[in-house]
Length: 333
Image (cartoon, rainbow, N blue to C red; front, side):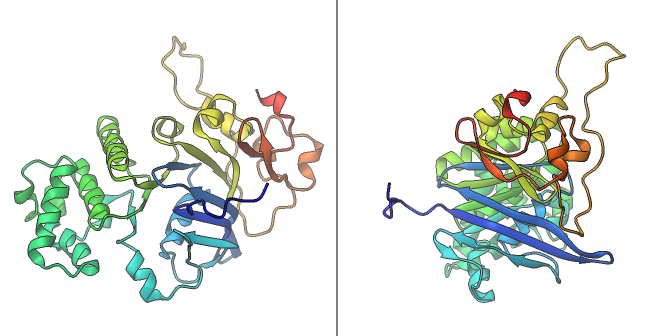
Protein backbone atom coordinates (compact mmCIF):
# COMPACT_ATOMS: atom_id res chain seq x y z
CA UNK A 1 0.00 0.00 0.00
CA UNK A 2 1.33 3.43 -0.92
CA UNK A 3 1.60 6.01 1.89
CA UNK A 4 -1.03 8.72 1.95
CA UNK A 5 0.96 11.77 0.91
CA UNK A 6 -2.08 13.99 1.48
CA UNK A 7 -2.32 13.11 5.17
CA UNK A 8 -1.55 16.09 7.42
CA UNK A 9 1.88 16.12 9.01
CA UNK A 10 2.01 15.33 12.73
CA UNK A 11 2.72 18.28 14.98
CA UNK A 12 5.92 16.58 16.15
CA UNK A 13 7.84 13.87 14.33
CA UNK A 14 11.16 12.78 15.84
CA UNK A 15 13.18 9.85 14.51
CA UNK A 16 16.38 8.40 15.98
CA UNK A 17 17.10 11.28 18.36
CA UNK A 18 20.51 11.05 20.04
CA UNK A 19 21.88 13.33 22.76
CA UNK A 20 25.38 13.13 24.22
CA UNK A 21 26.81 15.19 27.08
CA UNK A 22 30.45 15.72 28.08
CA UNK A 23 31.43 14.34 31.51
CA UNK A 24 34.71 13.65 33.33
CA UNK A 25 34.29 9.99 32.44
CA UNK A 26 33.70 10.65 28.76
CA UNK A 27 30.69 11.43 26.59
CA UNK A 28 27.44 10.40 28.27
CA UNK A 29 24.97 8.86 25.82
CA UNK A 30 21.96 10.37 27.52
CA UNK A 31 19.41 9.69 24.76
CA UNK A 32 20.06 6.81 22.38
CA UNK A 33 17.94 6.77 19.27
CA UNK A 34 14.34 7.47 20.29
CA UNK A 35 11.29 8.14 18.10
CA UNK A 36 8.37 10.39 19.07
CA UNK A 37 5.25 11.26 17.08
CA UNK A 38 2.37 13.44 18.26
CA UNK A 39 -0.75 14.16 16.23
CA UNK A 40 -2.82 17.32 16.56
CA UNK A 41 -5.02 17.30 19.63
CA UNK A 42 -3.29 14.22 21.08
CA UNK A 43 -1.25 13.71 24.25
CA UNK A 44 1.86 11.54 24.36
CA UNK A 45 3.13 10.53 27.78
CA UNK A 46 6.90 10.07 28.13
CA UNK A 47 7.47 8.12 31.33
CA UNK A 48 10.44 6.70 33.21
CA UNK A 49 12.69 7.01 36.25
CA UNK A 50 14.75 10.09 37.02
CA UNK A 51 17.91 10.09 34.93
CA UNK A 52 16.48 8.18 31.96
CA UNK A 53 16.66 11.19 29.60
CA UNK A 54 13.08 12.49 29.60
CA UNK A 55 13.85 16.13 30.43
CA UNK A 56 16.85 16.24 28.09
CA UNK A 57 14.57 15.04 25.32
CA UNK A 58 12.14 17.86 26.08
CA UNK A 59 14.86 20.50 26.21
CA UNK A 60 16.35 19.30 22.93
CA UNK A 61 13.05 19.94 21.13
CA UNK A 62 13.26 23.62 22.06
CA UNK A 63 17.03 23.78 21.69
CA UNK A 64 17.55 24.58 25.36
CA UNK A 65 20.23 22.02 26.19
CA UNK A 66 23.37 23.10 28.09
CA UNK A 67 26.54 24.11 26.27
CA UNK A 68 28.54 21.12 25.07
CA UNK A 69 25.52 18.90 24.46
CA UNK A 70 25.42 17.28 21.05
CA UNK A 71 22.12 16.52 19.33
CA UNK A 72 21.58 14.42 16.24
CA UNK A 73 18.49 12.92 14.63
CA UNK A 74 17.39 11.35 11.37
CA UNK A 75 14.32 13.57 11.57
CA UNK A 76 13.28 16.36 13.91
CA UNK A 77 10.23 18.03 12.44
CA UNK A 78 7.63 20.39 13.84
CA UNK A 79 4.51 20.73 11.68
CA UNK A 80 6.54 19.45 8.73
CA UNK A 81 9.41 21.93 9.26
CA UNK A 82 12.86 20.42 9.78
CA UNK A 83 14.27 21.83 13.02
CA UNK A 84 17.72 20.29 12.74
CA UNK A 85 19.29 23.16 10.86
CA UNK A 86 17.00 26.14 11.42
CA UNK A 87 18.71 29.37 12.45
CA UNK A 88 18.75 30.63 16.02
CA UNK A 89 16.48 33.47 14.91
CA UNK A 90 13.93 31.04 13.48
CA UNK A 91 14.07 28.89 16.61
CA UNK A 92 13.45 31.96 18.77
CA UNK A 93 10.43 32.75 16.62
CA UNK A 94 8.98 29.26 17.16
CA UNK A 95 9.86 28.93 20.84
CA UNK A 96 7.17 30.50 23.01
CA UNK A 97 4.95 31.11 20.01
CA UNK A 98 4.08 27.83 18.30
CA UNK A 99 5.99 25.55 20.69
CA UNK A 100 5.73 26.28 24.41
CA UNK A 101 7.02 24.61 27.55
CA UNK A 102 5.64 24.24 31.06
CA UNK A 103 8.57 23.62 33.40
CA UNK A 104 8.39 21.43 36.50
CA UNK A 105 9.45 24.04 39.06
CA UNK A 106 7.64 27.37 38.61
CA UNK A 107 9.63 29.19 41.29
CA UNK A 108 12.80 28.79 39.23
CA UNK A 109 11.07 29.14 35.84
CA UNK A 110 9.56 32.53 36.76
CA UNK A 111 11.80 35.56 37.24
CA UNK A 112 11.50 36.75 40.87
CA UNK A 113 12.37 40.36 39.96
CA UNK A 114 9.47 40.94 37.56
CA UNK A 115 5.74 40.92 38.17
CA UNK A 116 3.50 38.21 36.78
CA UNK A 117 2.01 40.72 34.34
CA UNK A 118 5.40 41.85 33.04
CA UNK A 119 6.45 38.29 32.35
CA UNK A 120 3.22 37.29 30.61
CA UNK A 121 3.11 40.43 28.51
CA UNK A 122 6.77 40.07 27.49
CA UNK A 123 6.08 36.65 25.98
CA UNK A 124 3.16 38.02 23.98
CA UNK A 125 4.91 41.16 22.73
CA UNK A 126 8.00 39.17 21.73
CA UNK A 127 5.93 37.41 19.07
CA UNK A 128 3.04 39.74 18.28
CA UNK A 129 3.01 43.29 16.89
CA UNK A 130 0.11 44.25 19.19
CA UNK A 131 0.68 46.86 21.86
CA UNK A 132 0.68 46.75 25.65
CA UNK A 133 -3.10 46.98 25.91
CA UNK A 134 -3.62 43.85 23.81
CA UNK A 135 -0.91 42.00 25.74
CA UNK A 136 -2.50 42.94 29.07
CA UNK A 137 -5.94 41.87 27.85
CA UNK A 138 -4.55 38.52 26.74
CA UNK A 139 -2.81 38.03 30.10
CA UNK A 140 -6.00 38.85 32.02
CA UNK A 141 -8.03 36.47 29.88
CA UNK A 142 -5.62 33.58 30.36
CA UNK A 143 -5.14 34.10 34.10
CA UNK A 144 -8.89 33.95 34.44
CA UNK A 145 -9.03 30.94 32.11
CA UNK A 146 -6.53 28.94 34.18
CA UNK A 147 -8.56 29.56 37.31
CA UNK A 148 -6.76 32.44 39.03
CA UNK A 149 -9.27 34.68 40.80
CA UNK A 150 -8.91 38.46 40.80
CA UNK A 151 -6.60 38.31 37.78
CA UNK A 152 -6.11 42.09 37.53
CA UNK A 153 -4.56 42.22 41.00
CA UNK A 154 -2.38 39.16 40.33
CA UNK A 155 -0.77 40.85 37.33
CA UNK A 156 0.96 43.27 39.70
CA UNK A 157 2.21 40.60 42.09
CA UNK A 158 5.58 38.86 42.13
CA UNK A 159 6.03 35.07 41.96
CA UNK A 160 6.86 34.74 45.67
CA UNK A 161 3.47 36.25 46.53
CA UNK A 162 1.62 33.30 44.93
CA UNK A 163 1.19 29.73 46.10
CA UNK A 164 2.88 26.85 44.26
CA UNK A 165 -0.36 25.87 42.55
CA UNK A 166 -1.00 29.43 41.40
CA UNK A 167 2.55 29.78 40.09
CA UNK A 168 2.05 26.61 38.05
CA UNK A 169 -1.17 28.04 36.64
CA UNK A 170 0.77 31.18 35.68
CA UNK A 171 3.27 29.02 33.78
CA UNK A 172 0.41 27.37 31.91
CA UNK A 173 -1.04 30.79 31.07
CA UNK A 174 2.41 31.91 29.89
CA UNK A 175 2.70 28.85 27.63
CA UNK A 176 -0.69 29.72 26.08
CA UNK A 177 -0.07 33.45 25.55
CA UNK A 178 0.60 33.09 21.82
CA UNK A 179 -1.71 30.16 21.06
CA UNK A 180 0.86 27.38 20.49
CA UNK A 181 0.20 24.15 18.62
CA UNK A 182 2.46 22.06 20.87
CA UNK A 183 3.00 22.22 24.63
CA UNK A 184 5.84 20.34 26.27
CA UNK A 185 4.92 19.79 29.94
CA UNK A 186 7.95 18.57 31.90
CA UNK A 187 6.75 17.06 35.21
CA UNK A 188 4.32 20.00 35.61
CA UNK A 189 2.96 18.84 38.99
CA UNK A 190 6.06 17.46 40.74
CA UNK A 191 6.27 20.14 43.44
CA UNK A 192 2.53 20.21 44.21
CA UNK A 193 0.37 18.29 46.65
CA UNK A 194 -1.93 15.59 45.30
CA UNK A 195 -5.12 17.69 45.27
CA UNK A 196 -3.46 20.55 43.36
CA UNK A 197 -1.79 18.07 41.01
CA UNK A 198 -5.18 16.76 39.91
CA UNK A 199 -6.51 20.29 39.42
CA UNK A 200 -3.53 21.26 37.23
CA UNK A 201 -3.72 18.12 35.12
CA UNK A 202 -7.47 18.47 34.65
CA UNK A 203 -6.91 22.08 33.63
CA UNK A 204 -4.31 21.09 31.04
CA UNK A 205 -6.63 18.42 29.65
CA UNK A 206 -9.56 20.83 29.40
CA UNK A 207 -7.49 23.53 27.69
CA UNK A 208 -6.03 20.98 25.31
CA UNK A 209 -9.46 19.78 24.24
CA UNK A 210 -10.79 23.32 23.79
CA UNK A 211 -7.78 24.62 21.86
CA UNK A 212 -6.80 21.49 19.93
CA UNK A 213 -3.31 21.41 21.42
CA UNK A 214 -0.80 18.62 21.03
CA UNK A 215 0.86 17.83 24.36
CA UNK A 216 4.04 15.99 25.30
CA UNK A 217 3.52 15.14 28.98
CA UNK A 218 6.70 14.06 30.76
CA UNK A 219 6.23 12.23 34.03
CA UNK A 220 7.43 9.35 36.20
CA UNK A 221 3.85 8.55 37.27
CA UNK A 222 1.96 5.90 35.32
CA UNK A 223 -1.20 6.88 37.21
CA UNK A 224 -0.99 10.29 35.55
CA UNK A 225 -0.29 8.64 32.20
CA UNK A 226 -3.36 6.41 32.48
CA UNK A 227 -5.75 9.35 32.93
CA UNK A 228 -4.28 12.07 30.75
CA UNK A 229 -2.57 10.56 27.68
CA UNK A 230 -3.59 8.86 24.44
CA UNK A 231 -0.25 7.17 23.78
CA UNK A 232 2.68 6.39 26.04
CA UNK A 233 6.39 5.86 25.48
CA UNK A 234 8.26 4.19 28.36
CA UNK A 235 11.87 5.33 28.57
CA UNK A 236 14.78 3.56 30.24
CA UNK A 237 18.49 4.40 30.11
CA UNK A 238 18.07 6.77 27.18
CA UNK A 239 15.92 4.48 25.03
CA UNK A 240 12.24 3.81 24.43
CA UNK A 241 11.65 0.29 25.75
CA UNK A 242 7.91 0.20 25.12
CA UNK A 243 5.40 2.36 23.26
CA UNK A 244 1.80 2.23 22.11
CA UNK A 245 -1.75 3.32 22.91
CA UNK A 246 -1.92 4.03 26.64
CA UNK A 247 -4.83 1.72 27.38
CA UNK A 248 -3.17 -1.20 25.59
CA UNK A 249 0.27 -0.74 27.16
CA UNK A 250 -1.10 -0.44 30.69
CA UNK A 251 -3.50 -3.37 30.26
CA UNK A 252 -0.87 -5.72 28.81
CA UNK A 253 2.64 -4.33 29.31
CA UNK A 254 5.14 -5.99 27.01
CA UNK A 255 8.35 -5.03 28.80
CA UNK A 256 9.50 -6.07 32.30
CA UNK A 257 10.37 -2.46 33.14
CA UNK A 258 6.84 -1.28 32.38
CA UNK A 259 5.48 -4.14 34.47
CA UNK A 260 7.83 -3.14 37.31
CA UNK A 261 6.63 0.46 37.19
CA UNK A 262 3.01 -0.67 37.32
CA UNK A 263 3.66 -3.07 40.22
CA UNK A 264 5.36 -0.26 42.15
CA UNK A 265 2.22 1.90 42.21
CA UNK A 266 0.69 1.83 45.72
CA UNK A 267 -2.70 0.13 45.81
CA UNK A 268 -5.52 0.65 48.31
CA UNK A 269 -5.66 -2.90 49.70
CA UNK A 270 -5.62 -4.73 53.00
CA UNK A 271 -1.84 -5.03 52.81
CA UNK A 272 -0.37 -6.09 56.15
CA UNK A 273 2.58 -4.38 57.82
CA UNK A 274 4.86 -7.23 56.72
CA UNK A 275 3.99 -6.81 53.03
CA UNK A 276 6.37 -4.42 51.31
CA UNK A 277 5.66 -2.39 48.19
CA UNK A 278 7.32 -4.06 45.16
CA UNK A 279 10.39 -2.27 43.81
CA UNK A 280 12.63 -2.57 40.77
CA UNK A 281 16.03 -3.56 42.21
CA UNK A 282 19.22 -1.83 41.15
CA UNK A 283 19.75 1.55 39.48
CA UNK A 284 19.76 3.03 35.99
CA UNK A 285 23.22 2.32 34.51
CA UNK A 286 25.79 4.90 33.50
CA UNK A 287 25.94 5.31 29.73
CA UNK A 288 29.45 6.52 29.03
CA UNK A 289 30.00 3.44 26.85
CA UNK A 290 27.77 1.85 24.24
CA UNK A 291 25.95 -1.07 25.91
CA UNK A 292 26.67 -4.44 24.29
CA UNK A 293 23.67 -6.16 25.89
CA UNK A 294 20.20 -5.35 27.20
CA UNK A 295 20.74 -2.50 29.68
CA UNK A 296 17.79 -3.61 31.78
CA UNK A 297 19.03 -7.21 32.14
CA UNK A 298 20.81 -6.65 35.52
CA UNK A 299 17.48 -5.55 37.05
CA UNK A 300 15.19 -7.98 35.20
CA UNK A 301 13.77 -11.16 36.70
CA UNK A 302 13.11 -12.48 33.18
CA UNK A 303 16.74 -12.08 32.06
CA UNK A 304 18.20 -15.04 30.13
CA UNK A 305 21.45 -15.81 28.32
CA UNK A 306 20.21 -14.08 25.17
CA UNK A 307 19.91 -10.82 27.10
CA UNK A 308 23.68 -10.76 27.59
CA UNK A 309 24.19 -10.82 23.83
CA UNK A 310 23.03 -8.29 21.29
CA UNK A 311 20.77 -5.49 22.60
CA UNK A 312 17.09 -6.10 21.76
CA UNK A 313 15.43 -4.06 19.03
CA UNK A 314 12.18 -2.10 19.36
CA UNK A 315 9.76 -4.43 17.57
CA UNK A 316 5.96 -4.71 17.23
CA UNK A 317 3.95 -6.76 19.70
CA UNK A 318 0.28 -7.08 20.67
CA UNK A 319 -2.14 -4.45 19.37
CA UNK A 320 -0.30 -1.48 17.85
CA UNK A 321 2.49 -1.66 20.46
CA UNK A 322 6.28 -1.88 20.32
CA UNK A 323 8.71 -3.25 22.89
CA UNK A 324 12.46 -3.72 23.28
CA UNK A 325 12.77 -7.15 24.89
CA UNK A 326 14.03 -10.69 24.16
CA UNK A 327 11.62 -12.39 26.59
CA UNK A 328 8.54 -14.06 25.05
CA UNK A 329 5.55 -11.77 25.39
CA UNK A 330 3.54 -14.63 26.89
CA UNK A 331 5.84 -14.71 29.93
CA UNK A 332 5.00 -11.11 30.79
CA UNK A 333 1.22 -11.28 30.50
